[in-house]
Length: 157
Image 1 (cartoon, helix red, strand yellow):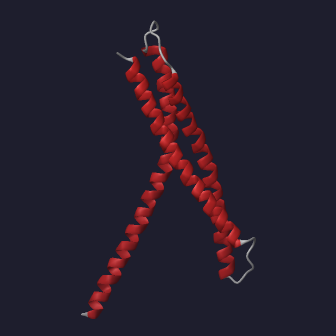
Image 2 (cartoon, rainbow, N blue to C red):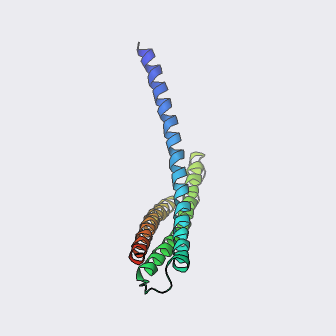
Image 3 (tube, rainbow, N blue to C red):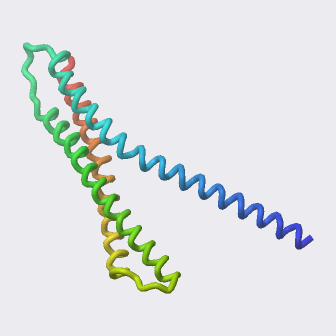
């Protein structure tokens, strides 16, 4: 009976490992889509709001554009910070490659190139910056949408 349990556990563990790999692929897909969505939605918010002013708002009414300008600033900031996120993500991956190559060198009993601890600390910094920038992008995008909605509701009677 113990041998049968061992086979079941091995199969169960193997299934969990496959599940983990599939979940990792889903996470990667989600992260890849996040940047595209931030850029698309922020750009769309800018284009929509500019068209809204030109084509929808009556020409003869007095409009306070402060809310709209704040919305534009937030959409623009979201796009610019997303670009910074791309740069920090790039450098985090470059550090990861250096770290991995050094681990391979170490396993092959070859001398490591550079300072491994420095590479790891730089990767950590770049990863942290990327996470902060992604959070700010989302925050600014949501803020831009909120201010745009407030502007639209205040100017359409």
